[in-house]
Amino acid sequence: MRHHDQITQARKLLSYLDTRTTALADSIYCKPVSDYTCPQQAALEREVFFRCAPINIGLGCLLPNPGDWMTHDYTGVPILLVRQPDGSLSAALNVCRHRGARVAKGNGNGASSFSCPYHGWTYGLDGKLIARPDERSFATLERSTCGLRTMPVVEKYGMVWVCPTPAATFDVDGLLGDLAADFTVYGFDNFHHYETRVLQRQINWKLAVDTFLESYHIGVLHHDTIGPLYYSNRGTFDGFGRNLRWALPRRTIGELRGVPEDQWDLIGQTIVVYLLFPNTVLVMVQDHLQMWHIFPAGNGVDEARMYVSLYTPEPALTESARRHWNNNFDLLMATVENQDFPVSEGIQRGFYSGAQENVVFGRNEPALQHYHEALKSALAPGGQLLNVDGNN
Image (cartoon, rainbow, N blue to C red; front, side, top):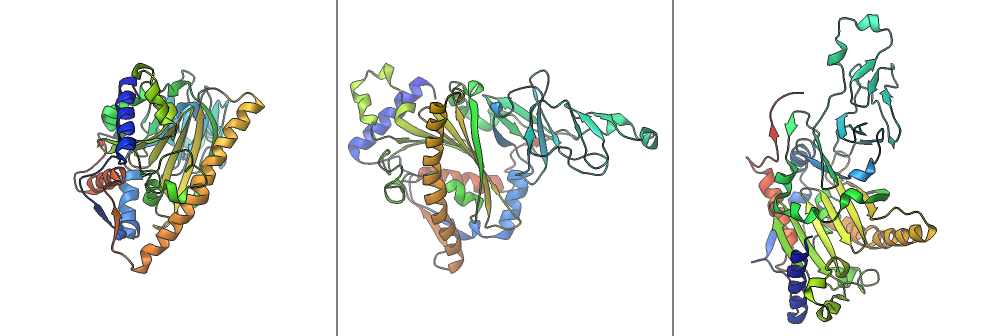
């Protein structure tokens, strides 16, 4: 976040503390419970958000060196990302063009090619077919037409986006809008990947996203974890197209009052939460970044799979550094995995009880209201998220 924006947000937060209020929406918002339980809507969401639209993968440091590669199956489409010799990223369907087997599994580094485990067809880092056993049996099938099917991938502001639809195009700055200005100053290009954990819970994927979009619950649910560190039910909110940003103040933020504004450091006195529509949550926490990528799992509507990554501005080269980042990850899990998600699983089961037709978001929950209005808009006719302009 640019420094003049930090000053604006800090002024708001200090004012909210003085007036005992927070950023407010114009009215309450009612969200049908069926949006979390309807199989037909779940199928539409999978198609619109996770098959036909760009998805944020994480920071580029997941693949720091040429020959580094990773597979990604969370959208339901098998994807292979590879760091090329020239430093660029490529993305392709992780599907052999012979009989459809996956040519890579998991992740790794130092690759020079990928060989299908079924019949040995071999592909270069760029996805081009470079060898196939018994070549003469396939002589009439041009090798140049048998490479891995590529898909669009963009690396910008230190982050990576990929679209599971090979024929699509997308513009990252168009997706981010004015929010892009925040990411020009964080220096994510220089961050380091510390650890990623994969979680799976019996909740609708949107309910998992909801967890991160309000602080109203912090003083109650998190009274013994982050409650002593942060103010509950206080925060700024700004919408950026379908994306959003909100900031939660630490209980030490009053220290800024004794510091000249040109020296204010908002990041050190807050948690800054970004929602990159539709399923990626970035959490700036003082000296590091947490990223949550949340997907529907299984074939139903009641299961979410999430991978959460911790990124650091410096590599963890010492035992002291590793202990510091492990403590941060443990606090994160104690808060979200052990408190938020168990409550959310109870909420998901309760949706089927008939107790309520709607979920209510209060005026003090503007980020939730903004997010669910964005979901509604994107699912409406004409709400497409990208352009399709040809075939690969």
